[in-house]
Length: 583
Image (cartoon, rainbow, N blue to C red; front, top):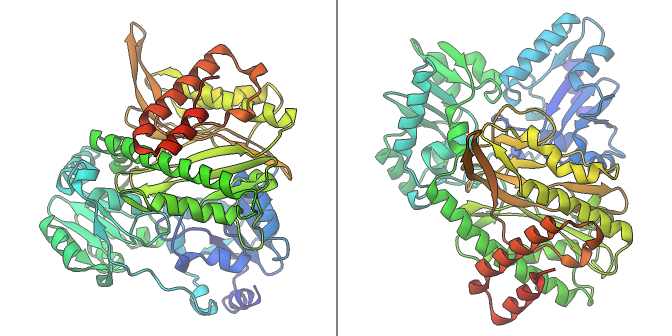
């Protein structure tokens, strides 16, 4: 931190804000942009660091409170628990601790236009100046990783279900309907979806670093030439997509005239926005809504991917049972074995996020990541929380199971079952068209609330199709989100409970919103569960399960067995038969 403060002093900077993102506002990003981790030591997927001449703070949400407390313990950074009522935002905190004539700096490429405008307003009221072109890591970060330059590839229409030309036509119709005649894209998943391209630039997320621009006569992909090869160049040519250098987008938008460009100020970085020389109109890209509604090909693909994913998990659980007594089963060895079993499956590309394999107290760390130093040996005692997923060419998976490994206390069984009751309640839910996720979130929490228990993370997030495992616009969480749940959306169902220092419990399946019925009161929707893997019955507290909950569990287990049995060996099939037997 000394080198950073020296750089700040040399430029008369009083405070520097360091986000955990890239110029595309990505949740996960390439190592080149991991400045926040480099300076603070905190490597969670959400968090912002702030450094002043005398103090340093790190803001992150409830998923990372325990992890951040550990990683920041000797870093000089103070943890601010974002989202709690008594925690100020980093903008509010700086407004209070800095004098009126202070200067705050950011790298404007790493902040959205909306965020910078909010900062400018708030700081301006206090007489604080904002500098948006401070890039100290270009100088102080020795041996900084390089930008990824691996060539991208085409996502075949047999998996995507729609060609790029058709998507562009649909998008431009929506753009023109909004009063614009061009669209500038920064979000990596939107670009990947629109052009049917994928890549390896970001771990676990099959996207490439690029910008995109389309209007009625031009389609441009701003991507470095090192990422081109004969195959993808031929594809771009066939789709009439021009290629320009990645950073060439800044000069390009500065040269535009007589255009009305649709931009999303929540995703477009401030530096790029500031370069645009023509008229802009703000709003969410139409791609966000189009991408969230999966077509028939995509839905068929994810159903097939779930079968393969279930097979891999069955093999992992059988491996765990065979190796646990020898001491060979650890958090890291389970993670490795699960990846191996998935890699054996057809169309596997990568994991969809770093596996969370938390034994006992590590399961209470919501986004725990095992390291050689923290790696616990798994014993036949307590709970093992396994949250994992895969990227297949035909779909993205995300599943969490909490596995009992020995005798459990009454409290452990009750906790496990209360969380499952919430999961079942949401899975069974039927709701009128237009319902938002915030209106359903309490359904999953009610069993826990009745015992004075809760969890701080959301209950459900959208999931992409061979794209980001966390995808908007829909969500199921306490915070209001205006997006209704619509047929074709894939969302997670994952209530949880975490007792710090003891264990964590989470039950997660992916669900598809589908039509349910139509009555004189309107059209109703429901969830169809897609994930195929049993819940462990040994942890159930049968005294608190209601008849309709038992019926749902038996029906779900029957479906799991019926859909997986043809892909299993006789021994695996027998294991699954027992795991899914009726209660």
